[in-house]
Image 1 (cartoon, rainbow, N blue to C red):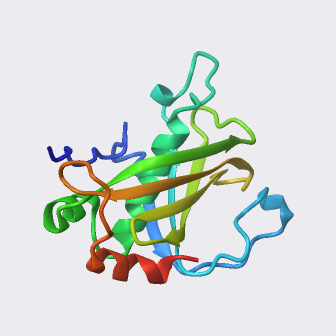
Image 2 (cartoon, rainbow, N blue to C red):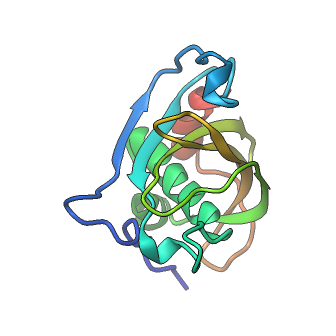
Length: 177
């Protein structure tokens, strides 16, 4: 059974809509950036947004699971930046990309109304899997908040693992570092 298309970023309005772009890598900023990705080859997707109240707990700190949602937003924008969307992959290529593994390390908390930057890179493109790495940072100070990684497996409409379609692999492989 096909999945519903991904929903837009939660809570976005005209005043806090994400700013996204796909850009070639830039040299790492000085250490003040708090752990920016160094030596990235290929491409990276960068998306900036403001922490919404609904993403925080009573103390104004971002709830831990929301970082994985932000990684998904970065991943979908990374793929979109290469010229296709998740919806097109599912509809036109007949496959889905299911998260098979997720790893996350929390370095510092994000708080309500902080400007956040999610930088997404594709670290590996194999025959059936894709691995994405993420850096979630405070957009203004550059402080590292979270580093994460997800491995996605290509599945057919019945949920069985399959080889990545050639068109998808050809689009993604050059962007892997």
